[in-house]
Every structure is written in C-alpha cells, then in structure tokens.
Image 1 (cartoon, rainbow, N blue to C red):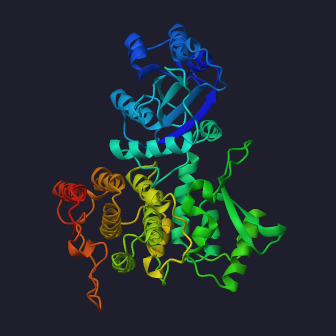
Image 2 (image 1 turned 180 degrees about the vertical axis):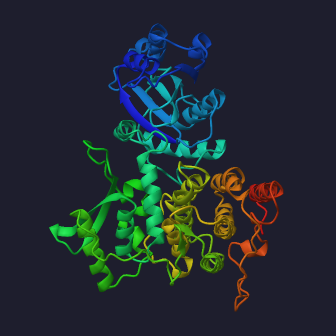
Image 3 (image 1 turned 120 degrees about the vertical axis):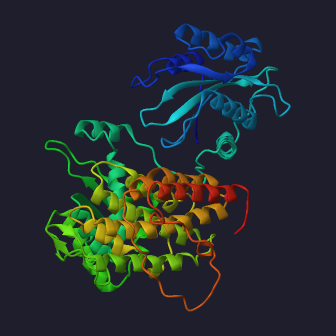
Length: 528
C-alpha cells in the first residue's frame, strides 16, 4: 500500500475534483466509504455529486470556522493506493483500513486528543490499474488545537505497513514495483499493445536473456537477437567503460522508441546487479564494450557467435523442432544439481535467494516466449518469481555461486524455434516446481506469508494448467551427495510432488493439496 500526501487550503475544490470525472474519466463511481461520525451520519456511503461535495467540504472545515483558526495548508490529503496485482478489496475493507490508518496518524481522537473531521472517498481503479481511496482531513481539531504534520510521511508509511500485515495485502516493505506512467499507457494504446504493457514484456525478455547468458557480451547479443533496441551509457564519453543500459521495442513507422533503463524495468536488472552472475576478466570486459558500442551505433553484432547452450549442450534442430532428448535430460540433471546447491542456502541470505528467484523467473520468461502467443500461466509465474528477485532493501552486489545458474535451460528455451517437446517441458517442470518449493520455504521461514501464498496460488492455479497435459517422464537420477549436511531450507526432507506423479486430474489435485498443506504449516508456525 502506497500513501501519497499533499496539503492545501481549497477543501471545496479538492472534494469537487474527487467526486468529478477525473482527468481521464477514471472516477467511475465516487462515493464515501467512511469518515467522521457526524459527516457519515448525513451522507453515509451514498454516491456524491458536486452539491454534496460542497456540503462535505463545509463539514470538514467546520472546526476551523467555529474556532476562527488562521492556518495555511489546513487541508491534509492522502491517497492510499494498492498494487495493480493486489487482490480485490471491498468497500467495507477500505473503510476498516481507512479508520485504522487515521487512528495511527492521530486524526480520530484515539490518542486522547480532540478529533479532526475527515472523509475517505473511493471512486474505482486508476488509469495505472491501482485501486485506491482518497482521504481528506482538516488539520484543526474540535477544540481548535492544530494537528501537527511533523513527520507525517514516516507515520503514514508505518501505518501503511501495519495495514498490509493486518489485512493480508502485498507487503511493499518487502517487495515493490513501479506503476505504469501515463506516457507508457498512451504509447501502448497507440501501438495496439493492449494485452500486456511494453515494460512488462521487455522485463521478461531482458530477464530471460540475462539468465541465459554466460557473459555480458552474450547478454548484449541476446537482447539484439530478441529484436530489442539497445543503448549503453559510457563513462566520461569514452568507449571502454559501460555504466548502464537502456532497451526499447522497435516502434511502428513514424513513432519514436520508448526507452527503459534496466533499473526502471526492475531493481535486480541494473547492470551492476546483472554483472554479479558473470565472470569479470579484461578480455570479457573488452568484448562486452565492443558489443555495447555496436548496439548503440546500430552496427552489426561484433562477435557473431551462435547462442551458447552452456557446457556444450545444444538442441538438435530437425525441421525447426528441438527433439534432442539426451540434451534435455542433461539440462534437467544440471537443474537438479543447481537445486541441491540451493537447498544449502541459509534463509537469511537474501542476496543469494534474489539470485535464485531471478534465475527461476528467467527460465519461465524464456519458456513463455517459446510457447505462449500471449501472456499466460508461464508469464504469470515469471512475474511472481521476479517479485522475490527485486526485493526492497536488498541490493545484489556479491558474486553468485556458479552452481546456482540455470543458463543452459534458459538458453535452450530461448533458442527453440517452436515449442519444446512435451518430454523436455516435463523434465523442466519437474525441476522448476522443486525450485519454487525452495523459495516458498525460504519465504515462510522469513514470515513472508503473503509471498509464500502467491507461490502456492501460482502452482495451483497457473502451472497446474501447463502440467496437466504433459506426459509421464522419469526424473533423471542425481548421484548421492558426498556429505549428509542438513538442508538449510528443508526441501530435501520431504520431496515436492512433481507434475508427473499422477495422471490428470489427480496430478493437479495432489499439487493443490500439497501446497495448501505447506502453507497451513507456515501459517501455524510449524517447523520442519
């Protein structure tokens, strides 16, 4: 939940705007959800218009008038906005949240001081897709004293964090995502991209390209092969030190491209964060600088190599279809080895878990590109996992353990001319479900139950759709480890049911029951 505070002196003007059509006719159903008892006794939750907005404004200003208080910026305005992917929130919940919020910031008299007059207006979803309310309050109390706005923004932030926990909302103190700007939405409408915002689409491509790449130079080449425009930011106007990058989709004729820096796509997609996964040598830096410069100047790729399939694994292409089952089984074995490394990561090692989430999100992003004509279950899984990869307050700076990488699988999926074979998809799904279980257990261990719930829902409602038609394929056997160290997260203690344990619909049902049971254990604080 995001609070946004402004102050002013025109109560009537503000109320008229809130009950009006809005700047882009987004105020579809303006009405009060709660407020001071005196105001709500007259207006309740009925839809309000210009005339009633003036009457409400007069009631809000009543304390200032009858106590003859001279005060600049006596109107306190705060919008409380939810993320676009938040669950639906009813008017009753909005009312409860607004009242609790106003208690916490000191407007209602719950702190023993005289209360202020206020209302909360709800009028639907914003143009960016965020449900929200507007709170309008007088800064003059009933006894004529003034409500102090000292440190009101930190107080509002703290109150919002409390509401997230109390009402089971996405906790922005852990995860944050930028909203869509009006200019982005306008560009999407002009180009006909109404199914998915361009920023989300590019984030998935950039993330998959980064995970599939073994070097920075390969990353640049992959971005260009995915038909993205690429521009680098060079230090001091030179050509050897790259400090950042931007990407854009090729626009229709007559339109300018809309550029997004890596950090604008997601916090974990900045160039410094991405470089933690690649080996840094003078030769690699030189090769990368040459590719960045060629991309910036729209020149041909310098080192025009075929995309690596990591450790010599390449998909056999027969008639444009990847059918090399030996290669896909080796990929699945590599993923199982990576999962074994993941199982030893401490739950409090947030940087390493951000790496794990980024790798998993990249796999699903590449898989979505290979099989989904429009964003579907795999694209959804990629976005949910990306939330854990760009955790708020976690800056990815330390090098990643190479054993955690899933570059081979992601490269395999990106290189597929058509959808991979059902066998290949089954082998990949087996390992990805177990990786999701690792992330679920980490989040449950850190009391991030909302995030654990999202992973549960992703498996039950989205990935089960993908897994239902897949064939039965034995999972590649992984040699027993040399040591018997106890897993930090506990995944190996109880195996995760894969999508190949039973035929549909039993297979889907087992997944659902398993993850619901795991979530219940987390909610009850039951250790493993």
